Amino acid sequence: MTGTAPNASPEPHVDTSGASASPPAHRPVPRWAVPAAVVCGMMGAIQSRINSDLASELDDGFTAALISFGTGLVILLLLLAAMPRLRRVTGRFWRELRSGAFPWYLAIGGLGGAVYVLGQSFSVALLGVALFIVCVVAGQTVTGLIVDRVGLGPGGIRHLTPLRVIGASLMVVSVVLAMSGGFSSEAPWFLLALPMVAGVAMGLQQAINGRVTQHSGHFLVATLGNFVVGTAALAVVALVHLLMAGPPEALPTNPLLYLGGPIGIVFIAMAAYLAGPLGVLTLAMTTIAGQIVGSVVIDAVAAPGHLSVTTVAGAALTLLAALITASSRRRG
Image (cartoon, rainbow, N blue to C red):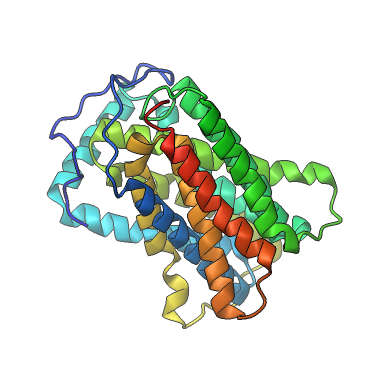
């Protein structure tokens, strides 16, 4: 990862007068953008598995989330110290944030990741992983449609074309199909609001990360901000949990369990960069497809012969839904 963002100007200047302000034109879409977003989603699936294993070893999901965010923050601070240009653009962005030149509410994307982790911690045990994922996808999909329509993302306003609506709807159906074998919950249905809120938070996170990247000219500025805000929020929650439930188990010695933070850096940085050319909805659809396919591949490796036909078919349909949505990006 180099110190210069692709296609970034030395002194970016973007209108940030409000959430609805739209850039004058969409950035050209590189041919590799959609495949890169799918790979990004697959990395998210790997990160989820690592963080889940770490939480199991510690018997504490809050501390595991804090460790994941915290290790990522340490790595980013080391990059900040080693990359002069990143220090310059970060310092300039911080001054603009303090002066009000850039709205503060567009710089708190890290709360989206924190809300997702907390929603996962509170609701997965009650709803099950499958229902949690379906609700997150539903919330993220609807948010992507709305965010693109109002122009909150860096790509400006993207209208609700039939292909975009069809692709988004097919994505939700595909995820339901892929996860259908795992539905088993007797929890009250009002608890579905928790993962849906997490999905909304993830959608908003991708939008405002793209805005920060567009304004600052460097995707690592948005990534650093995410880890600072997310680590701070999770540190408070983990401290409260520590006082109420006591300390976690001893730290595991397996170094692979600490890769969640580095993978998270790549995931957030790629998403921050791709939000502009792809739009928030297409970015959400392609990363969701990558996460579902990645999860299926992980399950196939971990437990060969246990995948159902509906799971594989649903995972394949998520890719089709992402392609349908992506094919409309030039028309939106």
